[in-house]
Amino acid sequence: DIVEFYPRIRFKSDLRLSVGSNSVNGHNELRVPVHKWYTKDGSFIYKPISAAIRGLIKLLFPVTIYGMENIPLEGPAIIMPNHLSFLDSVILGVFSRRNIWFMGKNSEFMHPFMKWFLRVAKAFPVRRYTIDVQAIRNSIRVAQEGHILGIFPEGERSWDGRMLPFKYGTMRLMLALGLPVIPVGISGSYELLPRWGGGLKRVPIRINIGKPMHFEQIPIPMQRHSDIEKASNDLKSAIMQLRGTGQ
Image (cartoon, rainbow, N blue to C red; front, side, top):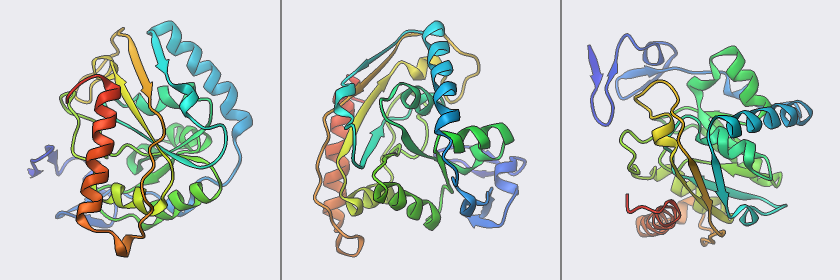
C-alpha cells in the first residue's frame, strides 16, 4: 500500500518506514542510536581513505572546483550546497581543504561499513520528517568546537535536477547559530548519479564555492517568519548563481 505520495512515493514494505518506533506522518521512521554519535578522532584513518577516494574520483570523472579559498582555514562556519546526488557530500568532503562535519539521514548509518565510514568522516545522523533534538545538539557542538558544519538546506536530493524548497527548520538553525554561511553550487552530479537512477555516468562535475554570507544571529524564540523567508531566499539565490542556473 502507498502510505505517502507527495513529494515522494513510499510503500509500507519499505523497511525505512516499518522499522523503529518514531511515528511521523502516520508511519514509523527508521531510528539509529544517535546518542552514540562520533566519539573518537579518526583523522589518521580518514586522511588516507580520503586521499584514495579523491584519486579514484579523478580517474573516473573530471572534477573542477572553484573558490576553495572561500573555505576558512580556521573557525566555525556552515557549508550549504544544493543536493543532486548521493555523492555530493563525498566529493565535496574529500576535496575540501578542511574537514566538513556533514549532517546525513539516519538510514545511511544502518549499513555497518557506511556507519563506520561516516563516523570516521565525522558525519552525524539526523532523523528526517521530525524535529531531531540530538542532531540539533550535535550541530551546536560542531560549531562550539570550531569546525565546519555541512548541511544540505533542501534536506534531500533533487528528483529532477531542480532545487527543492529549503527546510524551515534548517533555516531556523542557521539563524540561531549565527555563523558565516558558505554557499556552494554543484552541477553535473545529477547526471552522474541521479536519485532515481542506477549506475555511474562519466560526466564532468563542477563545484563552485562562494564567499561566506553573514546573517544576523537571531535566537529561535525571536525569529519571525519574515526573517526566515528572507534568509532562505538570499541563500537560494546565491546557490543558484554559483550553480549557474535559475533552477
